[in-house]
Image (cartoon, rainbow, N blue to C red):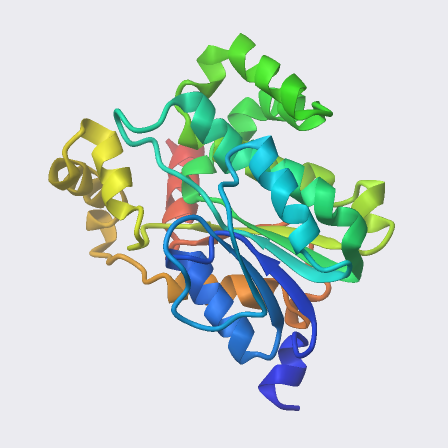
Length: 280
């Protein structure tokens, strides 16, 4: 069996958001190499490699998502949702982060779901920043249970104590969505797999924004993040490919029996944090 057969993407229709940079770009390039028909969304600059269709859009709003649906194929074999923004001080607010980093994931998934083929897959990029999702599971489930964009916005506005940290709560909601929805009838009834990767410290186009979100100064923020996540194991930053490539594998036929999983790709740091919490 050759690699293309093993992955099972050749000739299949794949939709991937956030393909303009970082992990999404790394994944999109591999999908092209594996023979997929790639429908890729970008927010800013155009791609520097060829895909089946490149769609420029802003996925932080209902209108932006609604506009791309007619651009997508009638049959989708795999959906990868990779877009996102940071908590950069002075540039974004908590509501924007919630809409872009979680609710757009839910909204887009559920719009595209009727087009996803039986035995297809949906894969998110989450984060190890959402590792404490259990602590706010009831709140996450309330957002997941909303049935419209406006209802979700009303919930966010009524719960500033939950949404104020922006990025963390959005990623916690992603994790809860994957675990709570994988056996919902609309997924399990057609054996559509639902998973996420939770990347650790990865160098992408958003790295400076994330660093600035800590103190307002990129260098200071980077030092704090490295002390918390890397220094204790003499670690290093990951490359976008070290996240995007495993994500492509998870959405492929290689992982045809895996669903409802949030896979931490962080060289074991989340495991050590969890052991530390359980043994302190």
